[in-house]
Length: 210
Image 1 (cartoon, rainbow, N blue to C red):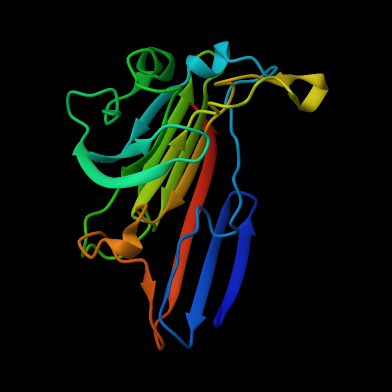
Image 2: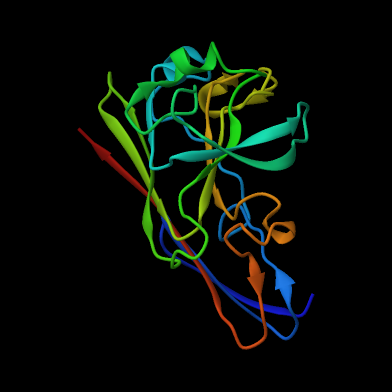
């Protein structure tokens, strides 16, 4: 693919990606570095109990639904309002209580942060708080979407720090990205990069305490 890229990491929790191309291409990355990071704000081992007490907030009024369940999720591209659904995380809510009425094994959905035509600018995307420890994670991004994934297929076989085994729902991912299937949906925020244009993706992960 005729793309030139430049990735920079200004600090451990902030990174950006700059792309240029000689041909028209679709750009779809879940983070500037193209990596998938699992988080848990609470201290301790790999059980799911602490993670389910995390309070999540998203700056999103719409989400995209899954088309087919399974390990690989194919997206229908259908955009639905979050109001009145388990996906309404505009106000802080415990993730454990939202998983119960959710169809399927858990969250693996794109939350829409921007509308088609909106400028690509760094904006708040999500906030996660663990009340007991007071730890807070805040994510901002220039991408129009963020995929929220609740480690639905971890089964305890992954061993982490201190010998902790990471079970189902023991962590979560916040993957900043273009809307799924944007390459085939002209009405979605564009993921196309054309000759003479510059693609700049910025994402920050900020940690603090309340």
